[in-house]
Amino acid sequence: MMHVGVVGLGKMGSAIAGNLLARGYQVSVWNREPEPVEVLVGRGAVPQVSVKALVESVDTVIVMLWGDEAAREVSLGQVIPAARAPQLVIEMSTLSPAMYETLENAASRQGVEFLAAPVLGSVNLAQAGSLTILAGGRQVTFERARPLLLSLGTTVTYTGSVGASAYVKLANNTVMGVVAETLTELLALCDRAGVNRGFAVESISGAFGRIASSKTQQLLDRDSEPRFSLNALLKDLLLSREAAESVHVSMPILDCVLPAIQGAAARGLGDRDYIALALEPVLPPSAIAVEK
Image (cartoon, rainbow, N blue to C red; front, side, top):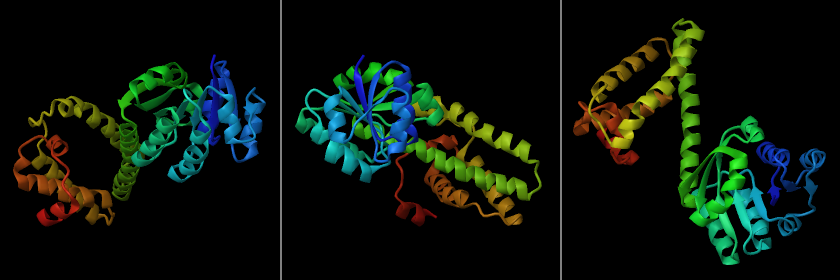
């Protein structure tokens, strides 16, 4: 069983380290604050006094930090300089594509294997080893890391490049933000109109999954044969905006979406399925503003 070092013991890092301990891995840990280290030491982890000491004592390093600034200081400034060939560094922090590429280049100069492996899932899934992991880097590096990654996630997907991992992770989390704000607006509309909240929550929440699953194959096939036309959607969105205005509810997400839908209709896509919007190149804001 390999000796794994975990750098960064926030909620996710601690959960990952705890899961590895439960699965019988030898685990060394480092964190700026001592409290998470003490908890994991109580479960059998080996504390390290510095990042350098940790890296020098393990076979594989997993890094789970807050973002680019922390990665620049710790991953780029301490982990990779201390690593040695053919050590493996797995960066599980959610970072920008540029930062992943910077880390990969620095690791390559050291002769160190590097994998970007951002995760989808919350702390409870990390504790259970049930994360979804988006791993990017060299194929041979991914294959080497796969057994360890399968201890951390039930779904381990090879994305290709480190940049691809970043873009897919950020796209997924952007969906979370858009869904959260959209739910806020739509529930406010229904609440203000006196709709039963339980019914509204169930219906609107169900719509997200139903719509996504029904359009997956069309997106893969680039199929815009109309099931529900873009013109029909536009008509209903305009009715939705009128309804919101009638009960004095602000809907900024809808206000952002409407110009894009109107622009697509003006370009002749109105009789196509509304998913045709996702099959076109994204227009810059200036172009959408002109069409509006």
